[in-house]
Amino acid sequence: PGADTHTIGWDFGDGTAPETGTLNPTHLYGETGVYTVTLSVTDDDSGAGFDTLTVTVENAPPAVDAGPDQTVNEGDTVGFAGSFTDLGTPDSHTYVWDFGDGSPSVRTVSHPGDQHLPDGYAEIVHRFRQPGYYIVTVEHTADNGLKAVGRLDVRVTEPK
Image (cartoon, rainbow, N blue to C red):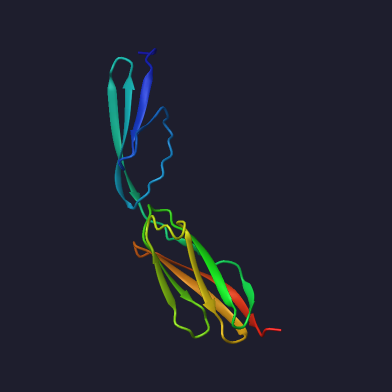
């Protein structure tokens, strides 16, 4: 009564370490799911109370940036470096590049821990055979099926 001190603990139900000391915590869930969150309050006389709530986490779609617009010469090899953000835990990612010039689309896949690229990047090269204005798109699909599309413009000129 009156002079008790209290210890506050939160278990977020996702296997992360419990958080203590605050009634207003913040927590970032790494995966889609339904989680049972438990709040415990214990006083210095070992009296304890508990309450639970359910948190439903839905995955957000990835975001994609295909890179900056470019102006290149006809026949030059052009490098593209797209980037993406995906808030979930490391997934496999599929990219489909469409260069807008009638050539076949190119599909690439990266997996968590691939050493050739840091997570969040997709790189590819392409050669435009005709002068013109092309819209290049990259469609990113995470292994959970969520998709996002990025685009950039390429102006291809005749070599001087």
